[in-house]
Length: 216
Image (cartoon, rainbow, N blue to C red; front, side, top):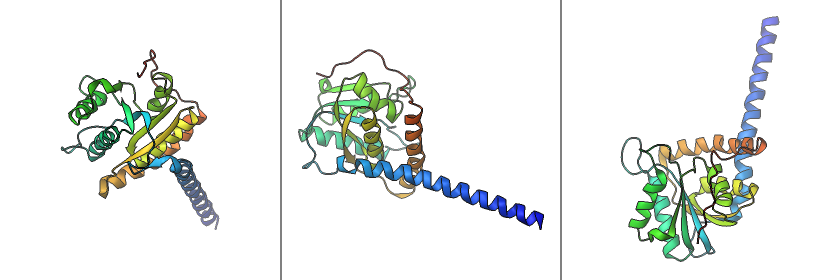
């Protein structure tokens, strides 16, 4: 009888932990989604002009080989915005973790190949996380308004962070990725959004700041 009662208590505790975790994860996810949806644009015709478009970096190649579709669609979206006159400059923010891995330089090469003049592209080599990219856009590059370019789920998170860091941001949705790869990324996004709130609670700062860089 006593053992049965203990099992019931353990079961109830585990159930309570599961329910609480579910509420936290889904709550964080949908708070970010609903608070940013009016600043997300999917059509070139409707998005207003911004001086600077901020493209968030990712790896060019997939682990198994071939071009990363998330990467390619961000490149395509940035070129579309620039050629449509919706942005005048591009700020590329990404990870420059080693001499063998440099997201900003790689993205810049593909943007130039796509027709964006080199002098119109600025690089942020210390965009190790989305938080770093958004805070540095305001503090280091002196922006008070920006168009964020990434997949919609990522753009929503970036816009939410920006709104808490005194940066007005709108987002342009790059083409998303479906299938099993898309599912894995979406699953990770739930954890990333919980981390956003933890970063806000603990006032997490970017890894680096550095000297001010003016975008003409």
